Image (tube, rainbow, N blue to C red; front, top):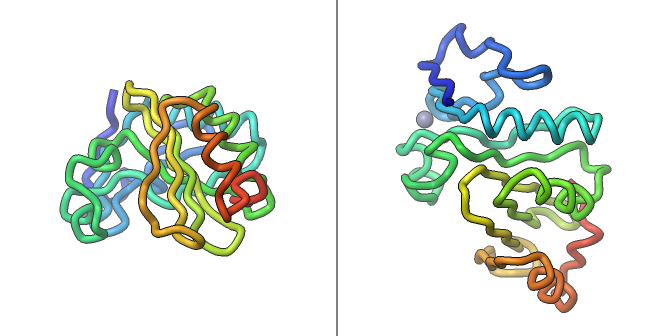
Amino acid sequence: MYVIINGGIELKRQLSENFQALEFACSHCGQLKISMELINKLQEFRNWVGKPIHINSGYRCPLHSVEIGSKRTSEHCLGNAADIRIDSTMNMYQMFTKLITIFPRVGMYHTHDGRGFIHVDTKKDQLFWINDRVNGTGKYIYFRTIPKLEEYIANTKTNWKALVM
Ligand SMILES: [Zn+2]
């Protein structure tokens, strides 16, 4: 089930205990299409972590997606994805380890020195990835399994297990 809101006062709607529709609206036009499966999974994570989750990006309309250099077919455009961070004191890898038990697809991004955010989505096709914009090229590196990801990050300049989000 998807919640679809065309901007305005309806965005004040509470989607779950801790998430409001507004937090997931397209930052460029205020439109929203969002999966309740995504919201429920995020709420499960929110309950576990016990701290506010900041939604960097939820729904993106196709125009906005292209504008920021992403694709019109991105899971963000389908309403199935969110980029999240917490409060810069939480260990990102620990959060990643929990999130992979809730979401089929989880990506870690290193965006500032020692800091980053995590992408989660509900597409039914298990996939994990890292994207290093600090010590790497910002290119996506994909993994089908966690052991493969662990093997890879054991040899990167970035210490992925020490980043905060
Ligand atoms: Zn938009």
